[in-house]
Length: 179
Image (cartoon, rainbow, N blue to C red; front, side):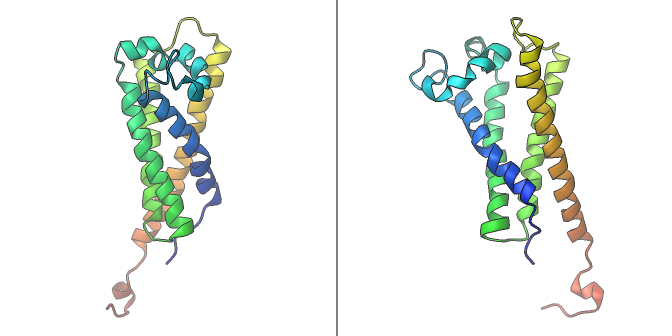
C-alpha cells in the first residue's frame, strides 16, 4: 500500500532543506564562513544572526559554545530524514515514509524546544545586548514559532497515520489467510 501524500508536508521539507543546510554549513564551516573567512561570501546573510545570537558570532566560536555545532549536526540528520520522506512518498513509494517524516519533524521539534528552553533558563544568555526587539522578533522569535508550529502539525498528522496503520486489523484478525 502506497503511503498517503501530503503536499504541504513535502513542500515544507523541500523548502526548508536549503535553509537548514545553509545554516548547518555556516556553523560547521566556521571560522571560514565567518567575517574575514575565505568562504564568507556564501554566508553573507549571517551578519544579522551573528549580531542577534552570540552562538553564531565570532565570540561564540572562540568561547567554544557547543550547542550550535551540535544542533548543526542534528540538522543534517533531520534534513536527511525529511528528504527520505519526500523520496519514499513521491519517487519510490514505501510504507515506511511516514516514519521518516515523523522522526525528522520530531527531532526538529525537540531541538527547537530545547533551543528556546535553554534561552529561557539561562536568561537569554546567547542574545546580544545590542539587539533591538524588532530584530529579535523577526530573526529569532518568529522563525522559532514557525518551525515549532509546522513541526508540531507534521508530527500530529504523520503520528496519527502511523497509529492508524498500527491499529488496522491484520489479515489473520480479519479471518483471512496469511502467506
